Length: 145
Image (tube, rainbow, N blue to C red; front, top):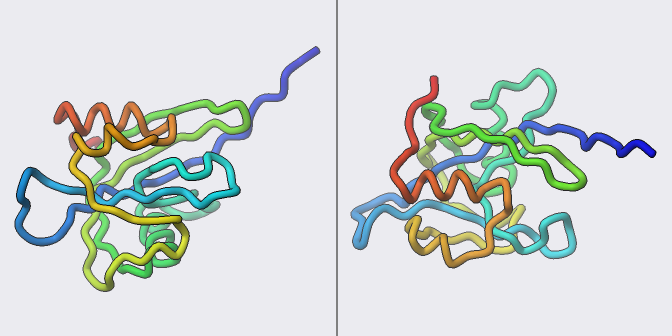
């Protein structure tokens, strides 16, 4: 009996710092997935799937406009990884981003929060995001472009 190979999707995520002065270190926007879907109520960095013919940067700007109601300035590629779930293989790309207009709203998430990398360790994150979170905490994110 052969096992079905999970489909592969390319997913982009944003590392969005909280604007303004930071007390206790930089804080970044994270979101909790909606209940009822795959990986329900787990935390992740905002973003989403890259559609056919779309660049990573355009996909990230579109996803954050649709799901957070913000306009982004998308910067450099910071991290890439791959994770296979039983139902799906995720190619995850993290891009630096800043909000240029709007206040983030949880249109496509259960809730939003700005947390330090240390605070994020206490949250249940999606498995694909764990290596990214580990590298963020260790200061190992860098430009891949």
